[in-house]
Amino acid sequence: MNTLIDQPILPDGPLALPATDAPGFALWQLLESVCDPEIPVLSLREIGVLRAVQPGPYAWQVYITPTYNGCPAISQMQDDIQSCLQQAGYHAEVISCLFPAWSSEWITLEGKDKLHAYGIVPPHAIATPAGMHHIKLVPANTHRSVACPQCGSTNTTETSHFGSTACKAMYKCLACMEPFDYFKPY
Ligand SMILES: [Zn+2]
Image (cartoon, rainbow, N blue to C red; front, side, top):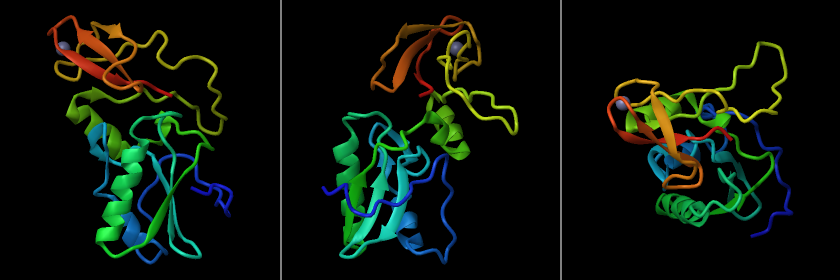
């Protein structure tokens, strides 16, 4: 993997599909079927991992940013992207970029809805007054209650800060006793 090639300036924030006449639109559309291996209801775009698709000198270049540095799912995501595009006849290289770093704010709104429907509480948005810059100094989850995705009760408790994957914490609802995952803000 060559990370020193002409790297585009990657966008920040959640991404919508590009315009239908944008270069690479067909690839973006194909990649909507490639899901996060750990959260199979979210496409890589919806979770904010897929950052850019551009024509390169020899192949299409697909830029991804893992949710965590060292995320074990990264090589599976690369393989899934490659095979999805190969099956459609595209030659592509997948390039991992760590800057700008992924943030849970990159999950799209539809993605957050899907997470919730899947039983994972999406990360709380950090309130940002309009026109002000966002400064992350305080862990976003401090003093915030996480509502149970089953019954909506906020009488919940964190049972483990690391859940089935490093990006999730395990919670238990004390009202309905349902255990659930919380996708931590990051
Ligand atoms: Zn509950």
